[in-house]
Length: 511
Image (tube, rainbow, N blue to C red; front, top):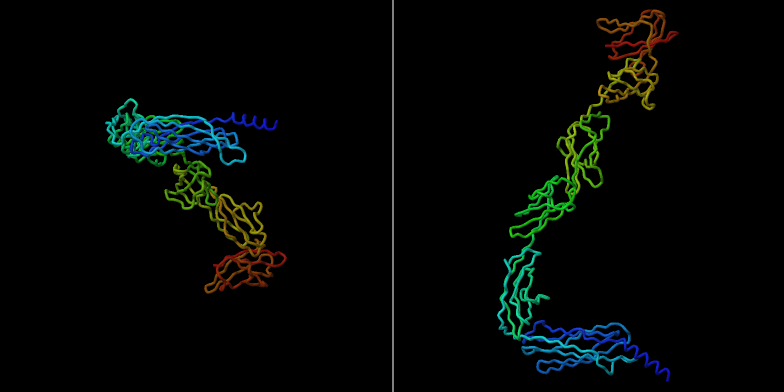
């Protein structure tokens, strides 16, 4: 007995939480005429997990329409919304009333369908059905010219009647929620209005509204100047960050600061539109070091472009001619000329002023040899080198006396401070130095003779070498002087070495 009472109490408590409501009744179409198939849409809700329609009935008596809907409620406590559509069919012109009674049944455990129902809620709704023939006179009264700009609207008015309803149409199609005596037209097309009153209706003639597109354009940039090619009757430039630019009312604007810019355009119809927005970064291209720059060919002069950064692009020029491939912010010129650089980012660019560069030639010294000493052509300063050993310490004169065989070079500095190095000069023999004996030429008519006269030791041995150090002969002097035939010798520089206790050398030049 206690279990039965507990179950009954729970059912009562659960049932008390259930609310059944008829929320709304809607008639389709919204302004029906007597030739329409008229339908009624009814929205209901219950505090249950489901609320499906189980049975329903529609009864018509004249202009009164009674509808009964029986809903089956689920077991869980949550809100359920249900929309059901009922067809009334074609109705006579006049005022009609729909009365809806909602019933509900509780779904017992183990059941899939409700068996009994009780009353839950009801709602009534009245509506007019107009005569499709449409005897009402309806007119549209446009307020102003029937041309609008895109984004604008145009006011349309019709005569307002007591208890009348309205439906505006665009190109014959009803406009959603356009159900008053006024309408703001926003799109191009043919507009009409239907009026329903006292069981009758009427439709206006159509009027054409033209909506014109707002002007727009893409901006172009040329250096610090931006412009539009749109043929407008008025212009107004704006900086996106700071707003309207006073006095900037032409198709061209010269930018004075970095920023984002656009222009307002007015076309011949008075429509207002805008260009795209263009970011402009003012670039002042410069080259360092300051002009003019003077450098030796042997040095590496670096010209640097500013501003500097990976976001910028560069192109170098010499005397106005593009230097192909020179697209970094640094460039090392090797020819004299006027250099410039174009720095760009996005659509912004600037060309630097011409930078004068003078490239000074490097000196090209030569080395000569007199058999004992190496001589450099004249310069301001000198430095001698032995190839393979490097710089010779202290060898900073125009001549150098080699003490080792090898290849010698000299680096010189000229009046411009430019350095240059000679070609290598090979020394294959050393030690052929000055002597205290006399040497002179005696030239006979048909032959050349080298005469050697020794003041201190007439009995000597003489070795003769060419300039490369190659020995070309050996002569013994028994009597003084020694005469050597040189008729078959090539012209050049030769070295004579005297062997003995006072071994010395001296050169002679053979013509």
